[in-house]
Length: 351
Image: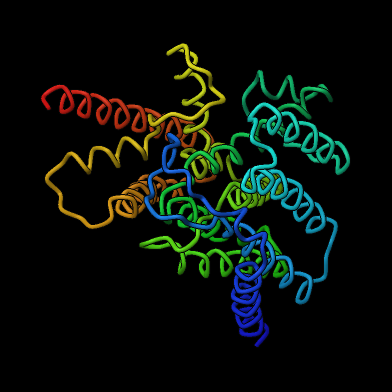
């Protein structure tokens, strides 16, 4: 019965918030009408209010139906802080990526220290050695959050890509860690899943609203804190199993930074050379006829991710196998990336 009440509350809050935002003058601040920026793949002016709507529907539902424990207080505070940072970019108050990165660093470090929140171990010698020092422990935990949050922001931009991906991650986490979690966690997890699902109704196949940076920061924050907490609670789950689950988010930002440095580009500024962008271009150049290549790209990547990650649930307690499989996934990513890039370059030269 409570779950039906949560669903009804989510629907009311989400749609009411959208109606209110649409009526007030601030709505225009969220409009994405810059079709010339490198990461733009849309041709219609679209509001980046998805994150705001998910935020309100999630926070209000949690406040009504759940008793806020220390863990929920922590995860919600991380979400709020990073959601605000992302939203300030959406409404063009923070446009400098260096300023946003600096604020992201400061606030997340302060939250990590305040909650004494860190990854307990990595089962990798040099990381575990560094983790024994307080300063490095804080820094390593920050980078765990950083890669997931910014990886989420990096893949956002195609209809349904990040939303569906986060749903898959949350589903896998709930399934594999069922014995380590309490009923309250399942409720808060399902509450966010419902909010994302409602958003996807407006986002796919043709987007009426976008997540925006506020939305990608919000979802990335939740996923990162949840993964660290679940791992710290678990006894037998390999840390590399969690790395497998977030390998696409992690490696997308990790590879992007070093690729740009190698190409003598500024790693803080966008380009059109990310995996989902290459796949989009590849589909356009192919003989495949499809009305919306944007949405098709999101579906292909998330299906590919599901097929690759699913086998790992059969050996999630075996650290050695998980470590080997994680490396295997990285190799698959690189092979696919260079194949797409090479094929696109060849086709463009022919034309």
